[in-house]
Image 1 (cartoon, rainbow, N blue to C red):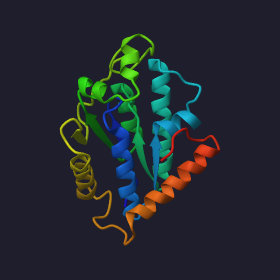
Image 2: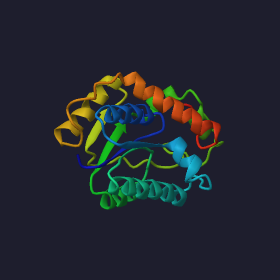
Image 3: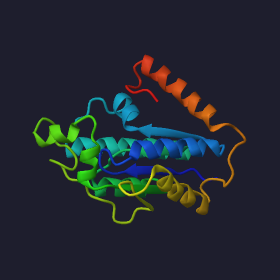
Image 4: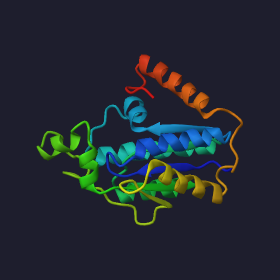
Length: 206
């Protein structure tokens, strides 16, 4: 199987983290080597000095892209969940990474605002959070993503079916899974994330 990077882009609250995690676990079930590069891990370990201006966001996205390229070069699949709001930076990563798959988590602003349990969008509208994507900073939707999931209309299972079907049809993953309980893989990841959290390499649990 050829290594690839699958990048989930979309507004905050559009379902990137949920779908990328599910995709990562499914790839592992197919017996393939993969890493999940989510926002928590990246910001904690690679971009802690960066803010959220366009320049700083571009640096962050380029770092993730370069790390993904290095993983792919060594036969490891990279699963990325990052807003990556600017088209020109996403284009650069597409040019860098040979097998680049973009998943656009398409969800209207009013829906992600309604979902926002942390109240980040409300704070951004009050001016408490500057450079907030979708409010005071733009999000440039992908024009030609490989996969589009409409997370305001589809269930997680429906969106996952689109993603997995694409990966199977294009020959990126095998069509059969390992003969192993998927909960075992998920528990291994939970233990690993708890270990990282205790040591300060992650802020969130699995």
